[in-house]
Image (cartoon, rainbow, N blue to C red):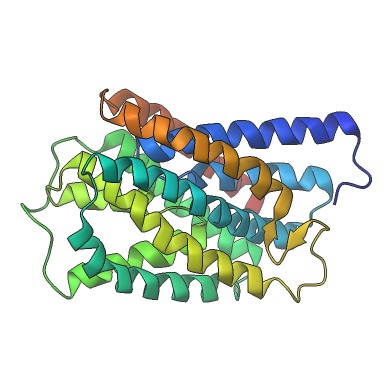
Length: 275
């Protein structure tokens, strides 16, 4: 993958990946959104500079992102668990359904072409950005979590589309849980643990499904890029606990608005690339 790449460009890539890991780790702990919402668009935009073909770059971005979420979610979840901010009862009830969704989403992601996978990310990023930017803080649809089967459907939805987007469960978990009057800090902490349920089977699926793909670049195992993982993962491990500590000390409202702007720009860039 990097045989014909100049040293300055390679150094620039490594620095970009390291910065992505730092930002993704902090946001994973701070907002519970999971670093994948940062990692996927960065990889999607830098991989073409290294000769990665358009028909596989989104799959590589998603697969690599899921791999980095494994250590991120472990690090972030441990920090939140120490603060008593993880709802283990909800995890037990949602876990099997989230796993079911992850398996379905991973299978579908590896069947559809890059256009569909990119479109899914662009559309859902736009929805997430709109929710962050315009949803009133006190907006709720009920005073508690819904009953079955809606409760199970929500869990499947979270797992399914998180796997297709290469993101941790927090991107969907936090806004959905808070809609049902769920405490924000516990939503963030529980979502960090949900990320592990999504990332492990999702990574395995993208790794295995890409093993027989002929036009993958060197440095990949299936759809997981090893350089990307080795650079990003240590940064997320180091900085996710920092984000978790900050989350318990500051009002994250303004940061959400800024992050929403980033998602709007990311979504627009992906829509443009599909034209």
